[in-house]
Image (cartoon, rainbow, N blue to C red; front, side, top):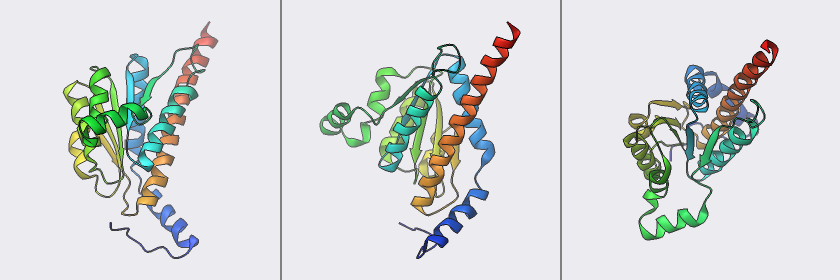
Length: 202
């Protein structure tokens, strides 16, 4: 793997993190938040997937979106599910079919037109993530990518793909988490604002 800038001291790492952060595609991050808000308004479901650190982020992001918005709008909830969390199902598909199918086969049980599939991959080339995006597209779902490097093959399967402009996987993963938190805060704030406006009007 090409890790980009060599890091020998903590100061170098954080300087590199700050440098890359400046070039994050902020408009794309706002667009992802808008897609999730439309899914919320339409009662659609958001599915997340990824491998390794991206699997952890898929779980984290699903927790933030699902629980974190639960009290914003009189009980209406954002329907969100991380496909990384059901270990028996993951291992069954990996064993009986292929690890490349662990997310796409789960999606085929549930995904509907108008749903949203969010794929997280530092390289953008993880085959199981690509298969999940393809299954989502075939079902008429909106596909969202969060990636790094040059976006990999994932770019061509996404309606929107936000790419961290770095070749360092740890920098990419740090900023993926920051992006997820920013998206959550945007979604939370907009839902809460609507609720406050409705309460004031009544």
